[in-house]
Length: 192
Image (cartoon, rainbow, N blue to C red):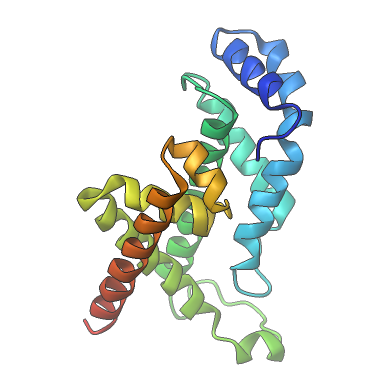
């Protein structure tokens, strides 16, 4: 995650925070490929035939990030952590809206190959995971952030440690604890 333009990205983020709109124009070419990598990581976990494509997810996240112009960007790592969160929110919103249009609301043609893998289950799983992750964030916000960055953001242990300002050992410990907690929570919620 720390590339050759890391200091330049941090400088441009801070300039953008101070109201320099030209900084945003210079920033986007430096971060676009990494945003696409994050979006691709998210989309790889989505059901086949998803209506949202990687580029559209990047564009939607970009629009929301620009609207969040009042954020006090700390550095490049902070920007990508927020970006990962924004992308997660977008996908969860889509999954929730699909879940609310059950049985006959938005009838559409479904290819046989797509019907074999129940897409609604993936949407339900994403929503259940989001609910469990929100519950974990109440109990242990940093563990929830570790999961968000590693699972949803696709960040490595090293990158996650950099974003959170903790050791790699701490990230691994919290990652393992969070996975156990989330699995237990998801099993419990599945029995309701």
